[in-house]
Picture 1 (cartoon, rainbow, N blue to C red):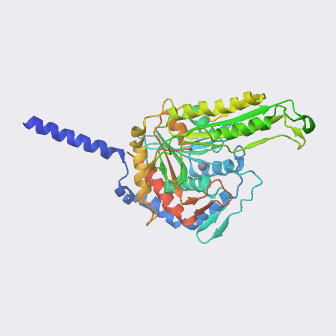
Picture 2: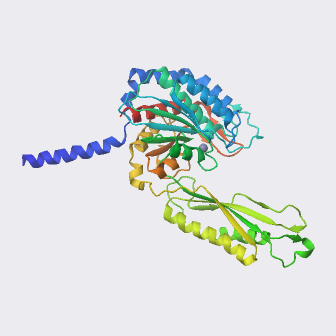
Picture 3: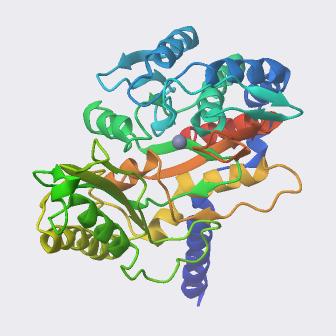
Length: 421
Ligand SMILES: [Zn+2]
């Protein structure tokens, strides 16, 4: 009897500790003098943070041309006293804030690039609490917040057990290229990876399957006067694009807010050089996204098949390019990813610091951030954000200035919780 009770008690406490373990954030942490000092220092610098955020937005940083922001980040990482500051050929820059030892190594990654070409006007317009400029949210807010989080840790002299790595990643917007290169080649083997790349009201723990194609149709070309009935890359393009929209899609996956997945999007098209000839070449792109590899593979077969068939029917030449080929073979199952401490702790800190009056944050099994690469490699990963942002990837993009202060505090609580466990 005694043994059975003891066993039952043991099992109960084991179950309790297993569930308790997944969220490592304890609000009491915020009362520790060093942490409290760090958090207070963020409040004290609120105005300066927003001013610097604006300056950072106004440094142009299209993908592959992030040099100016990299120089900025290098100077700041040096001032922070980070060790092992490194740049690589992809324009990633990273530095390490050493822990006292015995804790996990956690990467905080924010990307330096924006989707906007160099010529885009990026002067920030400030109206009330709103900052409007291309790139103000994605991902400059989070780059600013991550930098400030490391500064605040220093100001509070917060000691963590594990190492914290600050990665300012490059070329995120053109296929997560920087993070992929860094995770595969830096030599670091992080225990957890946090992509700081969302709004502060979002926590993502998944990795969208993303496959991107560019299809080309070619012909010898001919004058309009000789074009009647002739094979035409224009016709092939037209048939292929309408075919893309006729591919049957599975029902929209639930619980993803405004996202409707799976999806096939034709985002770019072009070809020809003159009005009075059959073009020698036409092309278009497809961005295919879904939640799981089985669906993705099925739709990918349909997309490529449709594109090829159009070429065969129209008797024109065909070739294709594929981008964003990430192998998710090592990704953990959905339930396991959801219950990872990095995800549950991020959820707890995001909700603790969320703007009063805003809805409770729930985690989404999606992601098209640097965290995808970590998820694909089987590294526990999450994507979070630090400001309330709107209309990313559009010229009208804006963010709520004051929201970054609680966002930075939330990030700091997450960093300390993960690395002192
Ligand atoms: Zn982004």
